Image 1 (tube, rainbow, N blue to C red):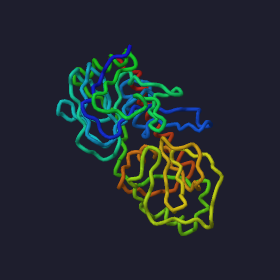
Image 2: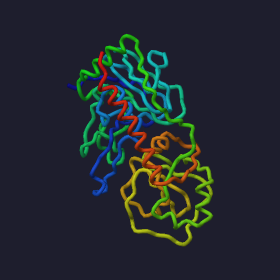
Image 3: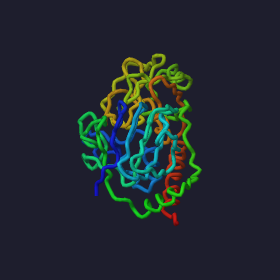
Length: 328
């Protein structure tokens, strides 16, 4: 049963409903979309007993104020903003029980750029191709296919489960959970990558620059891709490729010598050389970078990339198992 949970009294410049994205439609040229920091979105859901693919709020660093319309089990994960409930700061990466009529404010800036808010039962959202993610380009999914704004009211998608009722009962006693989660350092500049399919199209000098240069995230960056500023990179010769598959984390070299890192809303094919691929485990860190931030690439092997991803996913699985086995 859908119930109103949040009334938006102030909204920042880009806050949307996102889930795990649209799977199995890339062959039709449809972007996967979904949360740009998928790790944070899944963690927020797991912390409060949701299906990890439930719709969450993706909140971009800017002032927000929400009023709760019912008692709620909530989690905030990610960076960019410090949540405060009735003017009192609350912990990130923890399940929280918050009473009806409380005011949630997000004003104080923290390292990072995107904060994820999950509520028990997930947010009710319009579905498009089996996903609740907001696609701003075609105006589909989420909340009327658009970013949220002042005076919008959000509803929950499902009633609380027995686990969520248990969590709420424990939290009402002011108990705090200790999960020993390894939190990302959003000030870390190193992003691990693998050599891309067209790595060898770069000149030797440009290959060395990729290993040693600090790149700046350009203001011309969004959910589709991050444009990186640095010295111009060059190919060994004029290099054109047939449009080929790309995905989130693919690093393309444009004809102007700049790099573009494709993100969640990226197209499915591209015609620029794919010189690097950001490893899956570091996509969450990259997603928390904002215009003006510096990043530096560290080229690693496929084995290192797989090990890092499996370690990250194992931590989520362990947390989920621990919560599901909770007894009170």
